[in-house]
Length: 398
Image (tube, rainbow, N blue to C red):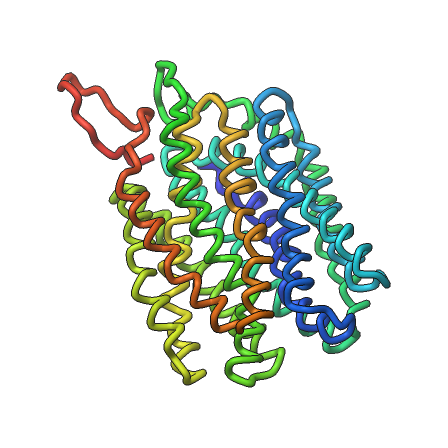
């Protein structure tokens, strides 16, 4: 494992996901200053994620065929400019186009970065991918805090300050493209110590997308509506709502790091199933809590369970499609993950017509579906080790 370049990729992931975390934090301010409905605000999340979900698998597809190292710095540039402009543009439709541009930038960055992360991680893919994923989670966590502080101090036009860290990271990635290029050509078989060609498992990959999509719906439901839940259900301030979201995501980042190491040791499928199973009672308890202090404490175990399956699912996606690792990364980090953003307007409609509490309550059924699917995920063929015994299955240390 090359820790230097893993740190670089993780830092890039941290920076670009600041802009994903920033958008939900902007929603209360946009609702107040632009007189948006909950459904209209949620549609902005939809726009950012639908643009990413459509384009990201394409970036992943071409990443398997062409060197697209440029996609990482260019993605950072588009993601930052699109989000920054959303704070100053005068009309709703211009804001929607701007956040869609940000989504395209996010789509460009992830497949190539995830592909290289897999290759440089050697035989500790769970650890490497979880570290990379935790960087993104921390970006999500810092994004709301930074954005809320800036907008409270300077108004929505203060989002332009978010261009500063992105510009610095763009420069670093441009200067390191040659070095990173040495790692992108490592074959999938070589990266896991296999000397034989392993066929792609498309059926298993589709099952995995079911679990990723379920997690995405829960994640984006909380990421979009948790600040508004704190404001409207508990009567707290916008800053308090942003803090609640940050608690969820910071704890989630810790969970991601822990889960990656546990997956390398005990098996990826066990961690995936355990996380979703634990979410079932946790979400049910959360929606029946009326005390804000108790609800805040509940965010910690919810985050641990919600984030634990993420990096093991990304690794499984890459292992199910070892010959199309870029496409697998693009889909697992893009198309399926963005299902939650596509579902956000539905939760917005429920919030407008019933209540935000009703919208969050609808999420309690989703982990049940995910847990059932997770129990039937097969071990990737690339993890089957032939030691002379017939059909002996064993979860490799990735």
